[in-house]
Every structure is written in structure tokens, then in C-alpha cells.
Image (cartoon, rainbow, N blue to C red):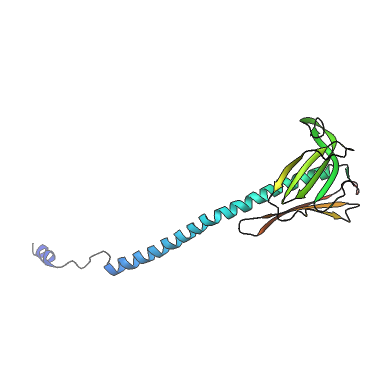
Length: 189
């Protein structure tokens, strides 16, 4: 029993735990890490609308460029009237419609398709070949920073290659550019 009495009265030498200073230092470090994480999260939330704007512009541009280049690739000829320009191209191509400018159909017929870009937007009009009217225009893309969309090589009078470039403005002000080119089938499409 003597040994028990000696240990019961002796102070405990191993007192595990944290001192007040250690707790304050750990709390300060934790707050700094948490503050950094919150700052990164807030930055991501604020940049999301800009990112969404850029993604939307790229998607709209890709769809429009794909449509234009597809019709150029399957086209029969680039028409002289109206004359090809940086903001306009008219071509004889195949469209899946019952009549030119009419209802959709299962088979394709040759029609005159005119793409015109003005006032920050591009439109597409379908009309029968050989007619002077251009048909009803349908907007295919808007929000363009420039309407100079088409580039012809070697020149607009006798194109062998047509480059289509759409440039969109985004919320942060920098442009998004979507571009593709088409080598015309027979060199004088």
C-alpha cells in the first residue's frame, strides 16, 4: 500500500493537451486557409458569367460556320449576282426542301442560297435559281463584331477557296473568333 500512497499524492507529470497559445496559433492558421478558399470560390462564381458568355459565343459560331461551309462544300457554283463580297456570298447548292424556300423534304434540290452579314448579324435566304428575288431571310447568327466574314482566294471574281470567319464580342470585351475554310470542288464552284 505504500507504493499506492506515493503515486496518489504525486502530481501528474504527463498532462496531455493544448496550451492557449497553441490553440490561438492553430485557429489563426485555420482562418487564413479558410479565407483563401473563400476568395477562390468567390472569384470562380464571379467569372462564371464571362465563361458562359464565351462558351455560348463559341457554340453559336461553330454552328453557323459549319452550316455555311457545309453548303459551300456541296455547292455547284458561287454566283456572280449579287457579287461575292466580304459580307455576302450567293451560291447554287443543294437544300433538303420540297421547293426552294419551302417546307423541308427528304430529298435535296438545287437552290440559290445567299448569306448576308450586316448590323452584327448574318442571315440566310433561299430562293429558286435564276430568280431575281433573294427569298425570305432567316437570321443564323448575331452578336458579330465585324460583318467582314468571307475571304476569297485568289479573288472574289474567281474563288477557289472561301474562308469564313465569325468574330463575337464577349462580356469582358475580348473577341471570340471561329473560322473555317472551304476548298471549292472544281476550283470555280
